[in-house]
Length: 457
Image 1 (tube, helix red, strand yellow):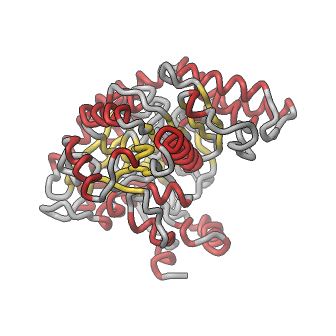
Image 2 (tube, rainbow, N blue to C red):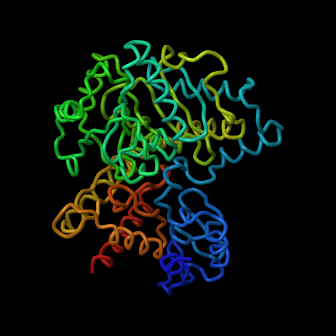
Image 3 (tube, helix red, strand yellow):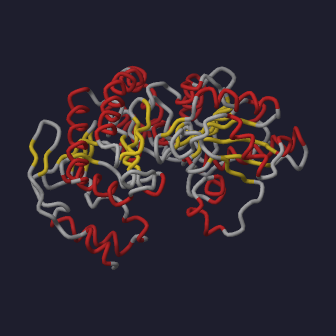
C-alpha cells in the first residue's frame, strides 16, 4: 500500500458538528470503518480509492449517512446522478413493484416497460428527436453517437467523411472511443494508436479557452488540416463536466449552422446536464439550439444504471434489426426507475426549483470567488451545477492540492463532495440534488466558504 493511500486511512480528530442538516460525531475516517476501507483497497483496483474515505451506508433526499451517526449534506449527487434526490419514494416503490412483478431482465425482447420509457423520453425531447435507444452508461451513449455520426457521414459524403470533432478538456467516458473523443491527453496515453480522424479544438469558456469567437473553431480545424467535407460530427458536453464551463450561446448557434451547412451531426453530451440540472430540462436549451443526437445518462434514473441516445429517425434507423443492440438495453428494473424519476422531476417541479436555487447559488459562489481572487481563477455554472477553478496565486495554473484540501475540509464539516476533477484535478465541483431548498443550500454555501478560508490560511 502506498504512503498516500495509507495516510487516507488514518483517523483524524475533527470538530463535532450538529445542525439540522449535518452531523459529525466521530473521527474521520471513522475508526470502525477502516477495516472495510482496507478490504476495498485490497480487492479493488487502486483507481477506485480516489474519493473521500467515507463509508456510505444509506442516503435519502439531500443527505448521506454512515452507520456511526454521521450525516452529510450532499453536494455530490453521487457524481450528478441523484437529480430527484437519494432514494426517492416514488423510485423505490417502482423498483420494489417491478421486482415483485417478476421481470428482471429481457435483453432486446419486447417489454411494455421499455415501450413506456422510450415514449416518455421522446415526449420530453425536442421536436424532431423522437427515436430513443436505451443503453446502460453515459460512455456507451457517446460510443453510439460516434458510430452513428460516422455511418451518417459516409452515407452523405463518402468514405472520407468520418472526421469527428470534440473539445479540449472534454470528458465523454472511459471506454476507448469515448476517451479518444475526450480532450484530456493524459487519459488516452494508454491507447497509443489514436484515430487520426478524431480532432480536438479549444473550448470557448472565456478562461482557459480565451477565444470565444466561432472563428477560433474554424482556425483550429484549418490548422490541423481538417476541411468541412471530412467532418461527420461535432460532439460537445453541454457544459464541460469537469469544470461546469459553458460556451457562449452565439458560438453554439454558429456551430449548429455550420453543421447544417456541411452535413455534419451536432451531438450534445447531456450525461451530466440533462433532466433539470442547469435549471432547464435540457442544458442545451441555454443555447437556443436543437442537436441531432442527445447522449444522456446519470440523472435519467436518479440511481440505477441506464442511459439513452435520443435522435432524429433518419439517423437512429441507419442500422437494420439486430445490428445496434445492447445486452441490458432498457433493463426492466432500471427502466421503471427512470420512468418514476421523470415523473418525480415533473410533478415536484424540480427543474424550476433548480433554476430558483441556482439564482441563490451562482451569485453566492461568484461572491466567494471575488473574495479570494488570487486562489479562485473562475466560477462557472448554471442552475445547480457549478465549479470553483482553484489556481496558483495570481495565475491560471491549476492548484490541485488546494482543491483537494477544500474538499477534505468540507467533508469533515459534514458537506459531502467528490474528489477534484476538471482541469488538472483542481476544480471544486458543486452539484446538490435538485430537490434541495434554500435553508440547506445556504448552510452548505457557508460550509464551503469556511473550508476555503481555512485551506487558504
